[in-house]
Amino acid sequence: MIIFTDDIRSVSIEKLDGFFIGWPNPPSREVFLKLLDGSDYAVVAIDESNDNVVGFITCISDNILTAYIPLLEVLPEYQNQGIGAKLMRMVFEKYHHLYKVDLCCDLEMQEYYSRFEMIKIHGMSRIKYQHQSGFETMPLK
Image (tube, rainbow, N blue to C red; front, side, top):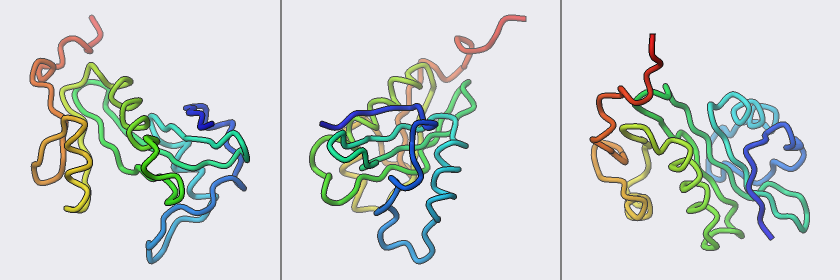
């Protein structure tokens, strides 16, 4: 069973192997853990049978208008099981009040992200014009 958590403190550094395939200079496990911890919102998918991290997503946001997804990755042997989709939905649930959520992706990934109501721009974005003014998230003074 795959469980999802945004409690990055529970992630053990030795459980972060196998990611960043094909990167010429991938981050170390230490840097990987730091980027999870340093994100405004990060979620990991964990295989309960071996306690390994099998997927993750990171997000940064101003919490007023926009958020950006820098990284979404699922280990190859766990792909096509809905893990990436669940991670995306968790970000959209967390930032449902925002005007838009952006990400950049390779052209061959645009079809995948379009299933989350993201549209093609120079990158990809899920835009909610009804939140464009940002007044709903501004604190009262």
